Image 1 (cartoon, rainbow, N blue to C red):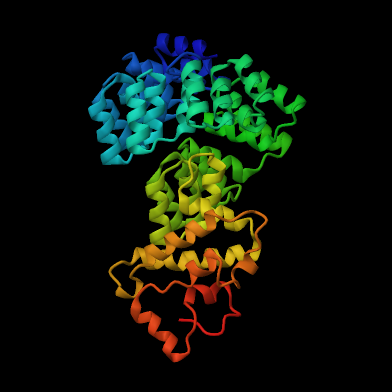
Image 2 (cartoon, rainbow, N blue to C red; image 1 turned 90 degrees about the vertical axis):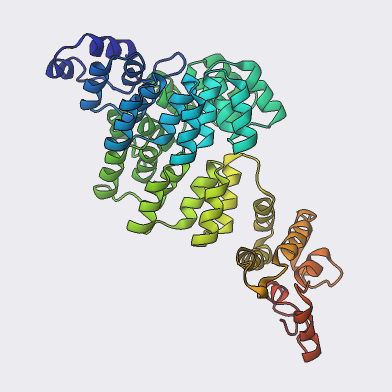
Length: 456
């Protein structure tokens, strides 16, 4: 299908004739060779501007075409796509990375907040290992995204390196192999490493491998929502509608898939006509690094900041996670669960939150105490919160020492336990004067152990 779209558009002289010729075609079918562009993207990369623009006019997604123009170093067309067609800075930065234009890649990362993980994926496709490592170590690019890109590019040595040394998630790797159509490797990861079949089928849907998608639906009973999300990300509206109408794929999941692809018109269609959940849409935009859209959904459609922060956690975007936690009171639990689902290296604070979640109501009470201290730590200008960071560190250390068999309820009433002592630590000498007035414990301990006599 890719070859047909590419060649037909390249030879076309009339838009209406091209429309007739490609009437049943999915215009955004991916090439199966690196760098895995759409036909519009490849035409743009090769300088066939008229053909690329005709495909855009017929409805081809703008991001892959903008990536193609960046790959060709066509800065005039890149700027036009960014300004007029709202092309994603991620796609543009990826194009420049594929071309080896490091200066413009960095410009889009710094000026337009292009996602470091997307850039690292492009460098992986280009086999520029030094730049991949630079973005992983300096800019915290997601190891799962990088491993997926290496799998898609067929670099098995790098895949194994990321799996063994950096613990890259096997389902991300399997998805990369599915995108590349390497069925033997997909089966290896599915059978021997138990890679998630729903993630794999999303890769096959993204790649437009309909026979494999159906095979997985019939024989491995994958969830139809995963299939629909994959097709939505690929911009294959006909296939999305097929799975929605025939197999009742969830409209909220589909809208999130369209958000992941920055397909704003289809997102809006699903929000308005199908009443798709703004929270999942905003999460999709956050996950793909479209900060403006995520914020638009928070302000205009009252999307929950916790959903947005979870999307950023899923993408490993630590700075945006902390922004939404500090400025918009995003839930610590939601953020921690986002990091957990991403199978990425989890920051210590959120690892502690995940441990506490497993300990039931008493664990949740400790989370509330941590949340209060974080609020204070973020307001370092206020003398009342002095040493909140030190107390928080002691609590996290105590949580890290917990065993699953420990009873937190008992530990919170045991003055000798590390957790009790951490929670009951006075942050400054003035507060300890409360003991002279019969206030025997800190506010943190009172929050988690209300049975304590009195608290400051």
